[in-house]
Length: 218
Image (cartoon, rainbow, N blue to C red; front, top):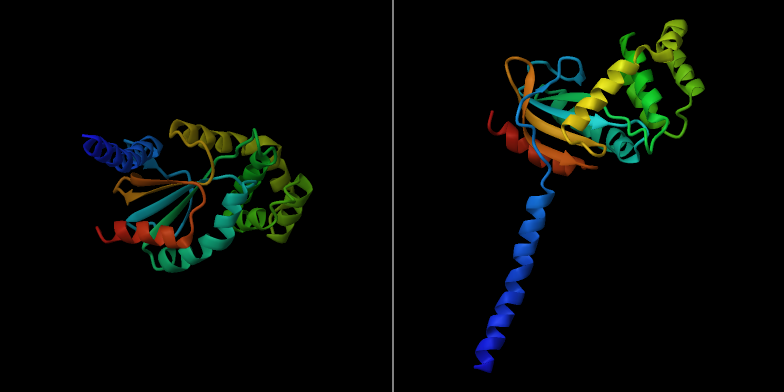
């Protein structure tokens, strides 16, 4: 009788961690939007005819976003974006409570976009993340060949509405941190039906795995 009881206890001990792990996994699974995401106002890189899109919500003062921009983005572009397999979509989500310089940095990228050089400013902001003062942004605008007066005027608040609108969209999607990624299929109406969400810093190997998986279906 004692032996039977010991056996039952052992079985319960060995089984319970698997149940606990499954339960935690289910609770931690990030929500995927039920409706397709609009990308018509976002900044994109790649062929507009690509059938798969990767959407990033990012913060220019976030160190994990900088890691992605400097270490992962280049290989991702080379392998998937340049061959026309993937459309990359960038959205702003400055976490102003912990990154007080992020919102103005996002506005500077928007102001650069109004002169056709969003990605150039994007790269400079992440490359010089510890120098996100207004003076530095104006210096980089000159380096990029922007009209200094137009850029400065824009920084006085013209781009704030766009940045805050994208932040509102992130919160509506229950995005709580940066970077956050949504991967999905581009629909004929230029929206993205999301099939996977990734929260936090991800490397190229992890992205290759999930992107290849969805590309196989197309």
